[in-house]
Length: 188
Image: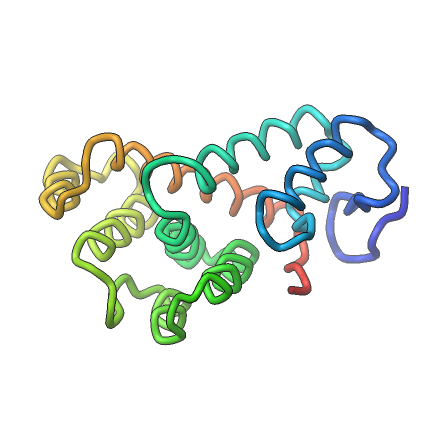
């Protein structure tokens, strides 16, 4: 298998060279479903663990690409969580993705700076982003009923709130993995 040379603590498995049928299948799904025609480095770094790669991709797909809430909101949550954690990988990758999806530069700049408000963001989006930031900065146990009420008062349903919480937790995992492994930011 060819590997990229980097400070990464795991080999970045090349989609072209993998022989493992599970890895090959997951990489094909990622290339097709993410919309960028590449396998991001986080998944390449998991390529030497086929079962874990499959599980992480399935969780990412179910959380970010499927569900009730728009992908853009979930990626904004990812940026806010990553900014609160001081984690560069998901912050940069998802800012790029949001830009490609048409999110205004002033919103991207605000999110990159760790802000949860920007011109054009609805009250419900701002409430969700504040909730995500608080859940990371203060910890899940510090999220009280008032914080939940602030989000649901903007029209966020119980099912949508569960999706928000799942997205927060997904990106907490992504941040931990990419930081510990030192996954290099994709050249996009």
